[in-house]
Amino acid sequence: MSNPTPDPMMPKPGFPTTRMRRNRYDDWTRRLVAENQLSANDLIWPVFVHGGDEARIDIPTLPGVARLSIEQLIKDVGEAKSVGIPLVAVFPVVDPDKKTDEAEEAYNADNLVCRAVAAVKEAHDGIGIMCDVALDPFTSHGHDGLLRDGYIVNDETLEVLCKQAVVQAKAGCDVIAPSDMMDGRAGAIRTALDAEGFQHVRIMAYAAKYASALYGPFRDAVGSAPNLGDGDKKTYQMDPANSDEALREVALDIEEGADMVMVKPGLFYLDILQRVKEAFSMPTFAYQVSGEYAMLKVAGQQGLVDGERVMDEALLAFKRAGANGILTYAALETAKKLG
Image (cartoon, rainbow, N blue to C red):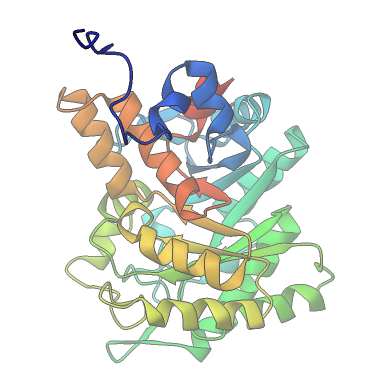
């Protein structure tokens, strides 16, 4: 009697019964078992505001991003709110005539960022406003702190940062985000805010911010690139070679009263993001910085990759690494797509 012809669909003897592809068979199954999902609630939208009347001024090095007038900012924040974005980060494009060595404009209660925040808060409730605390948009030398004999001094800079944080809080800012990387800034700002009755204002510390080559388009956007020139920020921002140091930086900011922490840049530092989240279990955010965003956008525009899918994949990578949220210039378009 001849042996029956083997059924090609039957597993060979000893073939494993576990088939990982079963849960990838249908779209609904893939959605059901997804370990990480991206929603509008995960997105923080960085926006640039200028003091003129022109509604939008395109930024050549940041495709799809523009400097907005205050009036246009109000409209765009309303749109962001309508699609579920919880927080907008406002960055000012300061008039060059108002930039000085001592950054006095940073703590002028009627400066551009304070006027913009007050206008947005008057027009919209139910969406948070975050303000950057650092001096680079306001200094004639383009640094985040005060310059003395070629060196960025720490403690004198803290005094100015505290004044800056207080005027932003008085304007209506909900989240103060010190990005300067001075030692002790989170604690100093917390003390200053509390002394003025702003105990409810949160601090999202740029806790692990690296001296990266990926910030160029941002510096173009806020107009600090010509001021900084060939200078660098390596004496206060972190060395890209270091990861253990990041944990020490984050631990100090948490100890000093930071409510949330951030890793910057994002995609190039996913290992840092994961370590920070696992070590501290704090609300942890990542910034898809201007260079990272621009590279993906330009590659999509040139047809080198599927731009939309690549952006989605990049944002999901932040979630997979442990981010509670992501600062990205793609926030509005992504939130609209997510519905």
